[in-house]
Length: 130
Image (cartoon, rainbow, N blue to C red; front, side):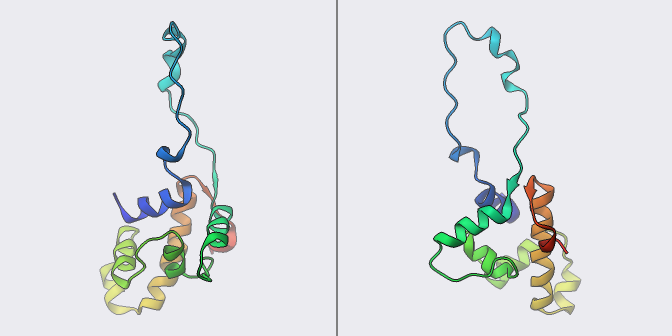
């Protein structure tokens, strides 16, 4: 599983966390023919989810501006190596990593993570996408 997928699942929740689907009643097989059709996923309010997580977190984290704090908030490794791996996964080049500082990568990565969350069904305030 990719680092971004792990991060997204921690914010959006996973299928395992959803309530189990009750077993169909006997004779209901015919009525369930369309049951396997894809279900439209409700958009996830990313800021709301992260704010709720922040309220329960023991550290004072600035997830709105810091990729390190965002990763800490969702209980992920926020080391330089993990951030570098996530940046490469999301399109930051090795050449940029080699030529630019980690601060510039972190700023890019925070924006790119927020954009990717929006692209994957999250509702993200515009201020985090700029």
